Length: 290
Image 1: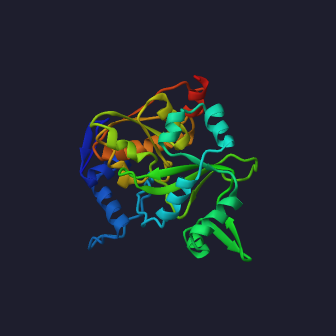
Image 2 (image 1 turned 90 degrees about the vertical axis):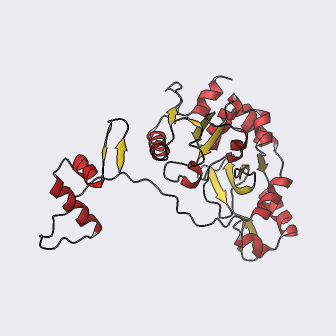
Image 3 (image 1 turned 90 degrees about the horizontal axis):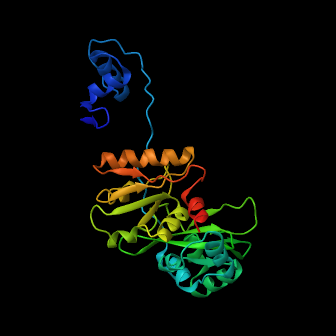
């Protein structure tokens, strides 16, 4: 069965095809049979009717290979460099309390980190976990440095992954990297432990805007993108009053529509956070208010 709460219409599978293709009952049945390989005896093979379907990514990810032991060691032994502090506090105007409470650190010297890691773990362990690359008996960190390190935790506070944000001067270096086999997930899930049902929960696309929302005093999480939405965690959000902070571009609109589709399908509600359109994202708007 299906129901559109905007148009106030609904029905079964055949009704949906009839409505979308604007066709009759028999043609709709033939279209469905043709799409799903159902043969109707004593009927000619129907002409294939193409129907433009919106594609939504379903989260069928396998178990992550993230090595929690190595990741936790890095987070525990890293600090926040002067360069990282300048980026976070002077440039982005983020809250010191937010950065500390989210355990955000930085890496400045990749060689020093590799040497320290090899003193605690074997090179084979580090390579298999995706932290280093071994070439000609030399060991190289698989992320660009200097970078800021964002730990990802699940709703129980367990470390499930690490993302980095490059803050150096190499123009063609990727800004964001996920390391050690970590699949993109929802950022700041641990905040759900402190929320009550129907309490406001703000959602951004990406960590940077999430930190800006948190620095404003909002309860906030971040989704990876419209094309990589972890539905197993989205279902945990529908008990809250969801407010999406939409980037002012096509990708932002796509992320909102994709998330809205799944939230409504799961029985929840979601609204948009309105802010001036001359800012490309909430982080830029937040900086302008400081």
